[in-house]
Image 1 (cartoon, rainbow, N blue to C red):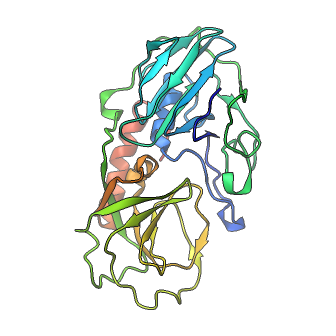
Image 2: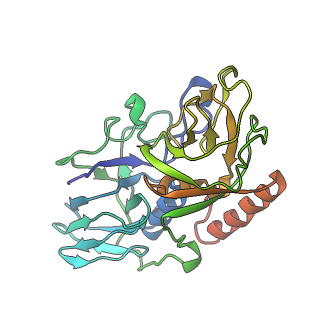
Length: 305
């Protein structure tokens, strides 16, 4: 394979280990990962390949069913155009090429049976900062060979993602969010500002440039638990929006929390994209989550955000 700038194995999240400093990891765009798995008959949390901004290519050494979801990129199979959001059957020797997406950042490749990776704390997801899980704890490199579990590709029909689950991606993101515990409402109105994602971006988080509210005693807060979707405000004045590989505690002001219903979109924000936040009360956030959960579970049984 040719793995491009960064491709990692991601599967189920590590739940229940934040007390020991281990983050959840897993797909940055949880829904796109689950959709790709559903298209090949896998459980939603089977390990697949998270491709960050392409290009990516791979030769298959055995027949399989594959599917692509997430950031749509020019893609070919043996030189002929291949589609996203549908089951594709490959034979031994077939060659897949995935280019760079025009919008969004991460593309998900699922293979029937799921990819076999190194497990750590009941998950095969790669946690790059500590070199744990996945493929030796690292990003895939050109020349790597990954193995899959036995799949059911011969029994599958051709599946397509329902239109209601194809979340469109552009160069601007409006994210539903609620106040964080350290938001005081002073100065710049957080809910009317537009921010820009900088080049400081990874699976840990995304830096946002723009005007942020004033926070009292910005450098004197005790460390507290922190989760993906949190927007922290470090002293230099740029916000930092956390993703699945983020730390488990932090002392910077936690001024906002992206609601769970929209958290999957964080994995698709790329440098230069604009971001704004839509205020939701706790009750509204719970309702938004329930609606999206029901929508996805109607097609991906047992899936939970």
